[in-house]
Amino acid sequence: MTKNASFLFTASCLSLFVPVPPRFAYGLVLVLCANVIVFSVILLHAFIDYLGITKGKTLFSLIGTMGITVLLYALLTLWSPLTAFTLGFIIYLIPVSSVISDTVFTPQPSSLRDEIRKGAKLSLLISSLGLSFFALRELFSYGSLSLPARTGLRILWIFGNFRSSPVFFWSAIPGALILLALLLTVLMFVYRRYEGGEEAQK
Image 1 (spheres, helix red, strand yellow):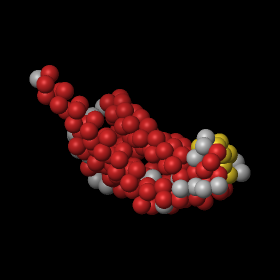
Image 2: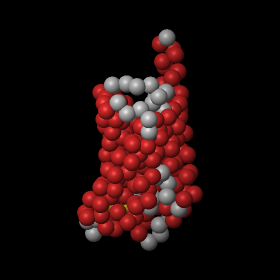
Image 3: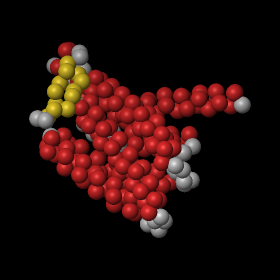
Image 4: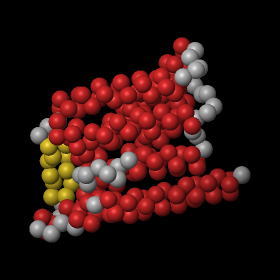
């Protein structure tokens, strides 16, 4: 995956977080589910390659990953029905994005070890940005941070004055889009500095 493709994939993944309620707890659960699904795609592709299946590889990967997602959603429902209901349709968008990106952005075959290493690096980047996105959005909206719980959310108040006057702009879609644009701008700056450093070394 090239740096440009990696940036596009990261941006597309982060865009899935925009419609999610501005609670860090939901972001934490969503990021954990996304990591499980992404690595499931990698292992499924490796298993399909081992079987020697070439035709319909993407379709088989999508069906298999959707099956894993259904199982993951069922486990989440057993643990916390409210969290599962809140994140429902977003979780089902992750396998589609993962399978398509793995097919489009990784046209050249590589070893399972290389795929896991690349997946781990990309997952670490997306997880860090995603959790930062949810943490900042909740802090700006309510002055709090939340943790997932079986019965809903556990609220940790960081700024007490937000209890009486929350800033609802950041909890709405426009605020989420502005925050996402700021994070992507910082990420683009880092990518360009990294590319400039590599060219200088050459």
